[in-house]
Length: 109
Length: 115
Image (cartoon, rainbow over all chains, first blue to last red; front, side):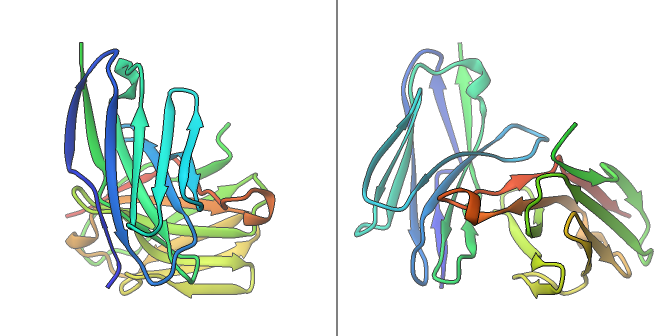
């Protein structure tokens, strides 16, 4: 079957760095997405990886290893506004998204 | 104004009632989707449409129906609502031709409570 695993909750300190991991099993693979979702709001797109390696966008970076079925989202210089859920989603061979349950990130001062 | 608009944003109804959630978009995207989100679970796809004449079932379509009235409008109906359909519902659009990833653009969500 198809499956996405990511931690349920993580806690980090303002100004620090946090890495949120995601492992996936899909029938075929057409890319890995990360979305940010603040409580009660819609998810918003953060990143897309389809090739192995690291993609950097400001304070956020996303990494993909296709051979390991593994991705991570790296958040640097954490700010209180980064408190949110982070959703990992893999696109299968039919271009359908398989979603993880999300990682709730709590930022402490 | 939001590019993807959902109405109503909140709705409380009773078991057995018919409910319609509406979605309209100004992004000009052909692809539209309806998802539901439950606490502790990932987003689950209900239905999707790649153009006005195309409707496809997602992973949890039972108990739901949809209508694609125009490129910009995609509505979700619950013919006879039941309590386990209480959830947060999202409409989304995408247009892979305009970007490398085909990222989804979500509406603000419709919170439905079935008593």
